[in-house]
Amino acid sequence: MELLPLKMEHCDALIRAVLDGELWKLWFTSVPSPDQMKSWIETALREQEQKQSLPFIVRRKADRKIIGSTRYMNIEKTDRRLEIGSTWYSKEFQKTFVNTECKLLLLEHAFENLNCIAVEFRTHRLNQNSRRAIERLGAVLDGILRNHRTMPNGTLRDTAVYSIISNEWPAIKSHLLFKLVSSFQT
Image (cartoon, rainbow, N blue to C red; front, side, top):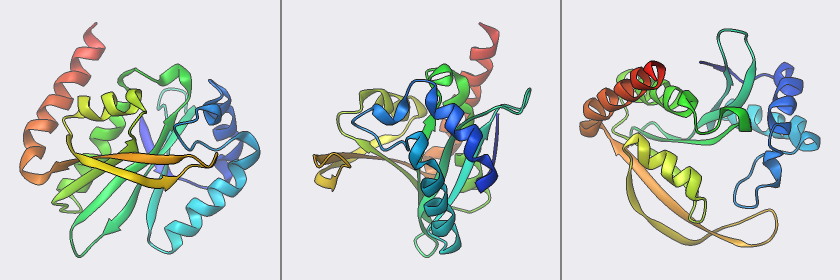
């Protein structure tokens, strides 16, 4: 897998990726629909210009197939922390090695190149698949922000907040590398 900077030219491939599983229909997450993809990319690129986030596409190296997106967001240079979020993968690649590999790349860069002291993950309290994926990375639940956000459908979201801190990173990195090697040996 590889992470590349998001560009408007990725729109059609991201639409194909989001169609696999009709991801925008999941009520507990905010994945753009095919009709919303162009404006979603425009917003992501505007946030990047304003240094609020750094969006990526997720692409399989072997055939260059774009399978999803992720980003750094809520970047706080002074406090040396950021959030990894807005992550989604086409259904075909969910519950595979993809999330582990992508998060390893993002975490490695955050801790070893950007010198972060903490990396945060947030998800809907009821999104059990996302919470399990975050926990499998080794992130620790910091708490639940109640009535934290209003969802597109008008419901209130409680947000589960997780983090990995810099002194945990070496052990977590070893764990993620082991998981990746193991996934390719089975």
